Image (cartoon, rainbow, N blue to C red; front, side, top):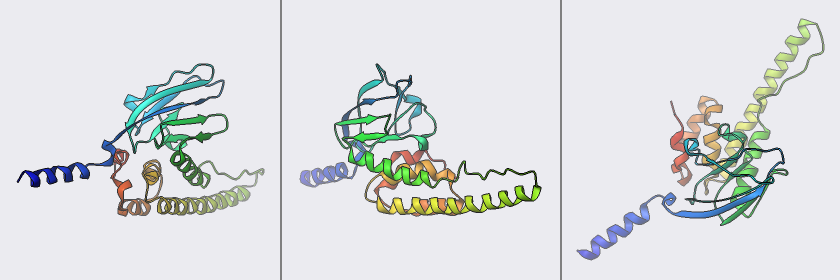
Length: 212
């Protein structure tokens, strides 16, 4: 009987989410000389964002987090999708360089950075066609072309998101992408997000999404 109870206890311990395992990581790096603020945010818990001390355009901070956590370093607490430095603690020491946008010491963080760059480069936000004419027909034609190109860009971005998720379905990178873009895509694509299965779909950051 005792052996059975022991085996059951061991089974439940193994069944606990992987996020229960903690890791300690030191993050340091070089910032822009004009940068005066830097926040460290774990799994988008902005209410408990840590203000990182900056000295001579450099910083160093050590944190203990879940091994699948997303650590965001940003000037602001908002706009996670615009953050260049979102780190995955796959090593004990990660170094960033704000001036050239590089990450050293963390292969998974670099992979996430590349994935987000692919998705953001296809972003239709901000695209417009300049019109240097007083002719209303020229303006109407430009707006029509602008809308058509925006739709093409949006479709390209959705395809990029889908491909990147498929390429990374064995890690937690898709969780960050879905978190950033869930509310920025159309309803059919949200349903596609909801249909995914895999360990990344259980990431705690996705619990922050309000799926209406």
